[in-house]
Amino acid sequence: MKLKPEIVDTILVAAESLFNEYGYHPVSLELVAENAGVSKRTLYKYFGDKNGLVSKVLLRRNDCFKKSLTDVIAVFSEKKDKINAIISWHIKWFKNDNYRGCMFVRAKSEYNNKSEEICAIVSEHKKWIQDRIFECLGGTKSCEQASCLIMLILEGMISFISVFGIEGYDFEQAKMYIYDIVDNIGEDNL
Image (tube, rainbow, N blue to C red; front, side, top):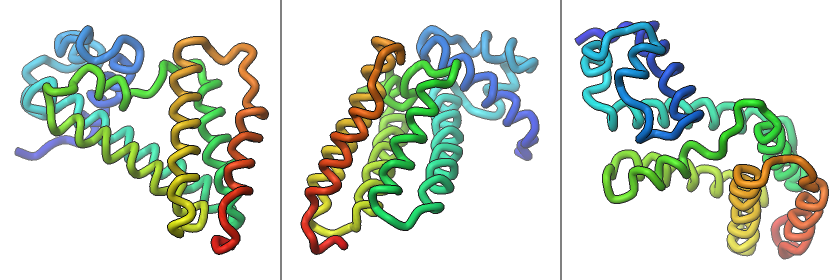
């Protein structure tokens, strides 16, 4: 079957917006079809079922995320600047009016033990982020614990902002804790 890219894109944009706003389970295929201006039959034709649609939305979002974050990191050469770029990218996301938390974490929560494919996409996404942090720190054995701690802080920020909102959150203080971690990595990383 020849898929029309413009139809696929229209459906994925509509589905991503709805899933981001309401979560995965509350959004029906009928609602996605209506918002995309296509029939439910077209959704089945292009994605098979709702799990197929969720997987494609997450893969698309993952590709956009990777490109955007890679582009931001590539501008810098120093490890602290690269880590700052990662954190600043996330802060900009938190301040976006469409921020509703991490769609990947939400997918893991809603599809845990229900879809291996969706959970694998989520795991790969989060591992990719931690691997980028590890690489930005120098990629040596002594960077492993630091990259894990920074990832935990970043994920904590995502959750905290999702629950409590951005109002009054001191991002500069969070960055200072992260810089302390970076500064305490062994000298063999320089």
